[in-house]
Amino acid sequence: MGARKIDKKKALAVLTGFKRLYPDPHHYLEFGSPFQLLVATILSAQCTDEKVNEVTQGLFKKYRGPADFAEEPIEILERAVRPTGFYRNKAKAIHGASAAIVERFGGSVPDTMDELLTLPGIARKSANAILQHGFGKLVGIVVDTHVIRVAGRLGWTANTDPGKIERDLMKLFEKKEWRWLPFYLKSHGRAVCKAPTPKCGECAVAALCPSALIGPPKAPRRRLRSKRSGRG
Image 1: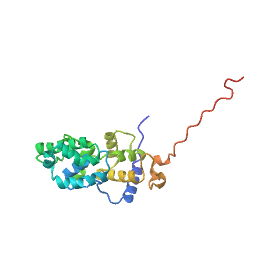
Image 2: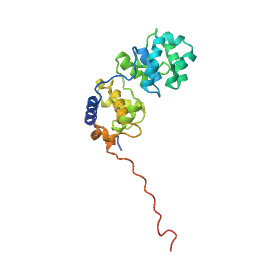
Image 3: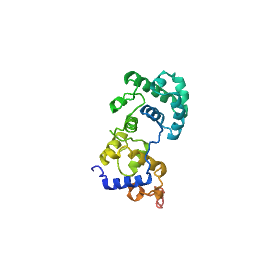
Image 4: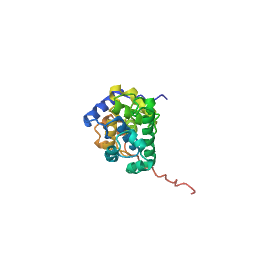
């Protein structure tokens, strides 16, 4: 059996609906430079954007750039980022990325995918976000948990691997849509298309969503014993 064909016209109609529902696209993380975005992106792993913004508000006042982070003892950085969770790994990644930026990139965040991927704590999702919102460069689409969930329910992809989902979305939508597409999916995922149970009855694009037509799972039927079992 071949791969399921995605209805591009329907996908564009959904995106148009999202643009009406969420008319103010913006990055959920607060930052003032590509480096601040890099730090905030590292801290955002398995943490709410609200908590990250709360932590970075003080963090960016104390540490002005990569050199400040690179020179700070790791134990102090751990205490500073502890509220975001997984603070040891995050402090190590920020410290290592800052040192690499100072030593290998002259103190400036690199602006290519290949160079960003050499930095500790930076994978493709993070690199895409930094390139798009820090440098205005579009080379791909940010794929986070909201994008994976909502795009899958909408039938825009049959894949679960983030890299394959990104390629599916890049084929489905024009490049001009790549930057803010994750914002629309994330906004809808937060407001309506929640995990584990979406609010399909409140969804403005439910008529265009194949998953909305699927009702709640039916309770399994109890197996009935045969009346003839063991009886003459």
